[in-house]
Amino acid sequence: MAKQYSLSDIKTHNDNKSTWIVIHNNVYDVTNFLNEHPGGEEVLLNNAGKEASENFELIGHSSDARELMVKYKIGELVESDRKPVETKIIDWEMYKSTNKTASSSSPSSLNSWLITLSLGLVATIVYRIFLQA
Ligand code: HEM
Image (cartoon, rainbow, N blue to C red; front, side, top):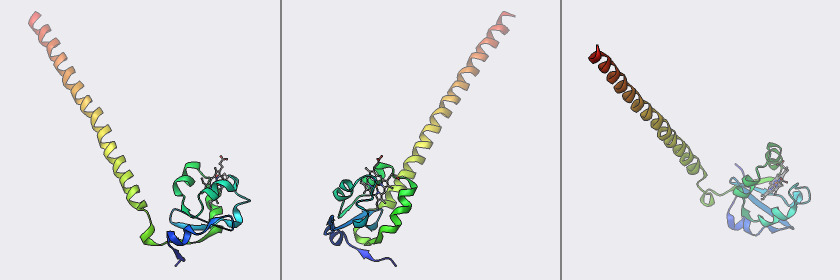
């Protein structure tokens, strides 16, 4: 099992002497990466000692960047300090499926309404022709 760190352990590693960052519940020691980071050391130092998943994702880091991270992983965030990431994913899935039902039900109800309307129209025309005959 990977070494577990709490947010209060991580908080103390917040300068260029020791720079730890939490991304997706993994703890990274990027002290030796500061000079190499293509995005510059400033952004890493701004996020030092903190949970930076959102900032990391906002940049849209490449898969190369994600592979590189592995090299700097030193452990994981203790369970009790983790944000409920899984719940977010489930919420999103629920949102998507709710949305899907809502959007797929509206065109189908529109369709059945149109069918009813055109049937009525056809019936009227047939009735008129029949009456005129
Ligand atoms: C271990 C953690 C990290 C690694 C290994 C890493 C790696 C990289 C790499 C390889 C790039 C080049 C572009 C790419 O391949 O996506 C990059 C760009 C960048 N990164 Fe990171 N990064 C890390 C954490 C962070 C964090 C926490 C931030 C905070 C906001 C950040 C901000 C940026 C920015 C601003 C760029 C420049 C994007 C651009 O020029 O378009 N990075 N990073």
